[in-house]
Length: 111
Image (tube, rainbow, N blue to C red; front, side, top):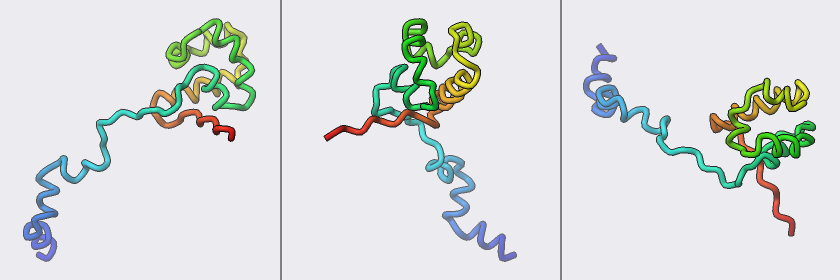
């Protein structure tokens, strides 16, 4: 009885249940994530760290474009001579970058 009075007499609660977009509007956004830093292959690999930045010259000469690096498969990296541990890190962080969960940090400005 009390639950029925709360649900049907309170207009804000019943309005949230009748309008499906009203209650969940703050959780979903149609805006895309914008990045402040221009990301290329060197910035990306330096952002990963852990020794992956040693392959910058090799990947820039063979792959060339950062967008191509984002869709590169493990076999291509293996053919380029990238060790397994570094391939795993590159593929892990490219996946996170595509989803918008990770991005390389901007270099601090030296004063």
